[in-house]
Structures are given as structure tokens and as C-alpha cells.
Length: 164
Figure 1 (cartoon, rainbow, N blue to C red):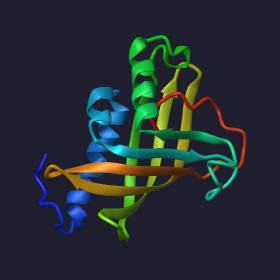
Figure 2: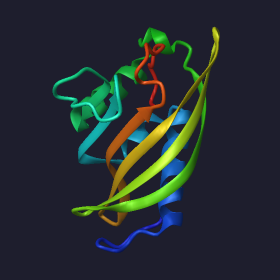
Figure 3: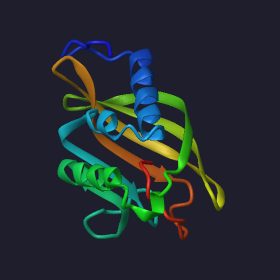
């Protein structure tokens, strides 16, 4: 990982490299590596029933704070998440990466993704748009926020038991 000066403006290439690393860690089930990318005050959100629903008023596919992210990771590592025995084979493509602004100390980034999940029952295609808030912490880029809007989140979704 490349060190980044705090307060420095992030360039698109370093942002892309960070997003590619995050995707690879998730795809390869490197849970410790993936978890290490998050800030202490992180939020991980996958809305259901629309793009901008209120997660405090409506059900979400995932709406985790930092503590719940750690709990989710611990559950995946036990091998007792039966929906992930054996683990899904995953590969995602990240594209259309844009730095869209800032929010406080965070750089707001948007990107599209397509993910193929391979299971014994066959392949499942997942696609959507992710909004990230990235922050420099101790010279390293970290995830402060990740919102994954699935293109078909207004429909009944198959089991989502992996890191999207």
C-alpha cells in the first residue's frame, strides 16, 4: 500500500488501486485484509426497495456499523455460515470510477460493478453502483462508508451471504 499524506487531495489512480484491492480481498475471502480497510466509524449499507431509502425506517439488505462489520467477518470465518459452505467463487469488475466530491475529511467516490458469484446451483450475476467515502488515516487510505445500490434491489433478491 502506498502512503498518502493526510489532507492531500486524492488522485484517481490511487483511488482506483484502493478500490481494486478492496474488491480482490472480498473476492478472495481475505476477511482480515478486507476488514483492515475500514475506519473505526465506518458504515456499510446495501439498501433494499430503492436507492435512497432511510435505513432507520426501512429494511436494508445490509446496514452495518463498524462493530457489526467485525461481527459479520467473525461469522464468515467460523465456517458455519451454511449459505457459504463451500464459499462462493467470486469475481467482480469495478468500472466508471469517479471522484465526485468531498464530505468533511472524506473523498466521495462512485463506481459501477459487475460481480459473478459461482455456486453449485449455478452462476448469479450481481450489478450496481457503489458510493464510497474514503479517508486517509495514519497515512493509509481507508473506507469510511460504502453504499452498494444493486440494480435490482426493488425485487426479491437471492441469498446474499458474501461480501458485496
